[in-house]
Length: 303
Image (cartoon, rainbow, N blue to C red; front, side, top):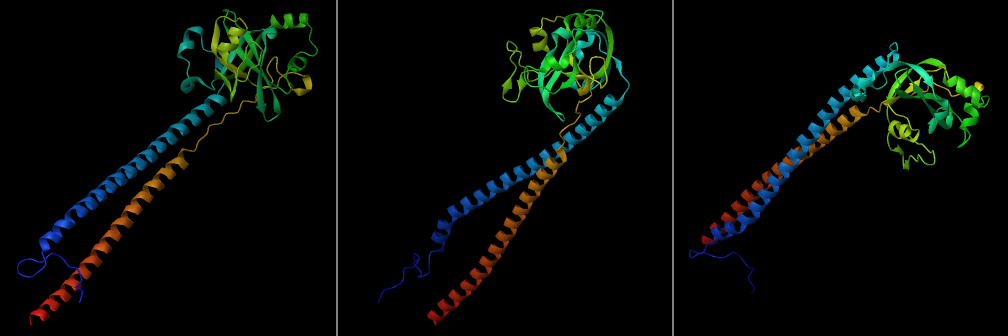
C-alpha cells in the first residue's frame, strides 16, 4: 500500500518543524521586502501628488494676481511710454498690457503686414513705425485689415498716393494703446520670412532689422480703437482696439486632479492593508484549527 509523502521525520518520530520553518524563511523575507518597497513607492507617490496639487494652488493665486494687475493696467488712464534708458528693464510681469501714450510721426511706407486671425476673420495686423522726436522708433499695431495675401496695401491706402503718404508721415500724432512684448520666431509651424515679407508673429527685432530701423523699442503697441491712422472697414483703414486680454487658467482643475490622485493612492493602500490583515486573520484561524486536528490525530494514534 502506497504512503503519501510527508515531511522529514525526526529521531523521535515527529516531523522536523525546524526544517519546515527554514524553508519558509526566504519566501517570507522576499514577501516582506516586496511589501516594504510597495509601501515606499506608495508613500512617494502620495506626497508627490500632494506637493504637485499644492504647487498648482500657488500657481492659481499667482495667476489670479496677474489677471487683476493686467485688468487694472488695461483700464487705467494712458501714461507716457517708457524712456529709452528704461527699455532694458521692460518685462512681462511689470509692463505688458500697460496703457501708454506715444507721440511722433508714422512712417507709413514702412508698414509691415503680419498674418492674423481675429473675431472678424482672417487678415493682417498692420505694424507701422512711429518715430518720436528723439529719433527712437516704436512699432504700432494700427489694427486689423481683412485682406488676402498681397491685397493689404489696397485696403490701407486705397485713396492715398505717394504725396499724401509723405505728408501724412510728417504729421505729428498722439497714439494710445497697450504695450505688448515682442513675439519672436513666428507662428505655429510657420517661421517668419523677412526676405519674402511673410510675417506670422509680431517679432519686433526682426521687423526692425528688415525695415532698417535703428533705435527701435523692444516692444510694440496695440493701438486703441479710433486712433489716427486706424478707422474701420468702411474707411478701408485698419480696425484698432481688437486686443484680446485673456489668460489660460486651469490651475484649480490641475490641483484637484493631483489631490484626487493622492486620495486614490491612499485609498488603494488602505484597501491593501485591510485585505492583508484579513488574510493573516483567516490564516491564523485555519492554522490553529488544523494544528488542533493534527494533535488530536497524533494523540489517537498513540493511544
